[in-house]
Image 1 (spheres, rainbow over the protein chains, first blue to last red):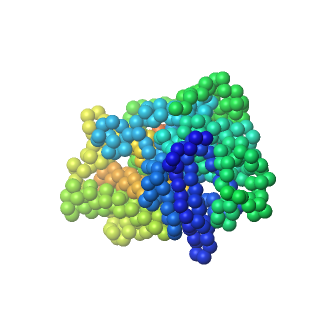
Image 2 (tube, chains in turn green, blue):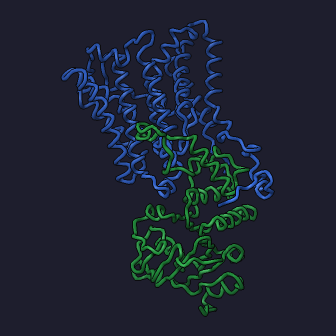
Length: 257
Length: 340
């Protein structure tokens, strides 16, 4: 992958402690546009803490986050979203009773044009339906899912695609996927992995948190391994094997770079 | 940018569709998700209507006069039902509506007697706002289920209503008031019809066409998710409790205008009727989905049952038995949880 001089996202010396526990310590991480980075590590290695620090849910104790080379003043998830950074949570990103349109547009609704109607929150459903259709096409399920279907009537893979669609629907630039295939079957997983490839081709950077080594090796350009809050490996996925990653995760192996 | 997929030729995606055969609409249907149980209330309505038309059709059930009387009786119930749709869809419940009816009717009557028309109306509406704020803030602030909070405030409000007038009736002599609430005619229509139609349209629009309605649905479907999506769920929960109390207050004011006076017993039997109508109408007791039109038809259905039974000569006790049976049957059909 051709790398631009300035990464989309860069963290320098990021640290976050909870009480006496160093959840993450001195993390340097860079993500370039159109790159898929696998973030792996055992439970408690600090993956979620790192993701939450970057996306504005936690304020790091030390270190800085740069977006496009600019220091990213911590302003919560909202500010991160404005800069085009979104997290797709494992199971918190959808409202089961809502239809696809509602799930894609909740809390960022398109409102009617008239200023008066806008003020009282009148929705422009037609515009949102059209937008939702376009997003479903983008995430590859436009042919099988109707925008009026309720989320609870969709399959697990389709749900995950809708959740990712919400995150990337508005020219988002960096998406964190927190174990997007954890609860999915083989075919459903395929759907999500294909979508990750599709996002990469469109220039969106993806950070994929997963425990599935095969999956990481298949879709990622680069793998970052955390162990006990520290980065122990950061290398191109090419030439890596599942067992060498597991080695880094358990501490049996150390990276040279 | 991104290439558009060719949906029909994407074999993988096609294959995925077969994973979910039950609810899948073949091809790309633009319709919303549909369940047969959504039709419960309409089928029930037709069945009950047909039954009474056949049995008491000759005793005045089918007359325009009887239709007017049903509409008059249904208006307060339906208004409260619209409020209850918001509350239930947001995943809360409001058991205090019946006692708010009595409280607002009495305070309105007192306001009318001592201060005049506008203060009287303001008293009634303020009663609703305050009761709803209390319910909502207690629920959110104490982190106690609204079921328990409103179980308590139901008693509290009933007590306040009884103390405020020492159990005495308060007559309403203000003719303008009565003609606006419950006893007036506007052209050929009674004012209750207008209240019902306007109330339904407003409720339906707020529920379906405003951002607020979406937030109510999201809050009731999964509060944690709604919060993760950036919705202020506490504000939504307080708002629905206020809406509910205000519809109850309005119902109380209409009752007071109808009988031209207020008694502390007003509304005391309404809670079950309202909840039954709403639930039969397809609103989930567990939050996330509701139907305004269903609540309207459900309320009419409950009122029509009482009306028909009266025409059949049933005693009050028999009416209660029949109502109970109908509620159980209808709820069993409409509230069965999908097997997922």
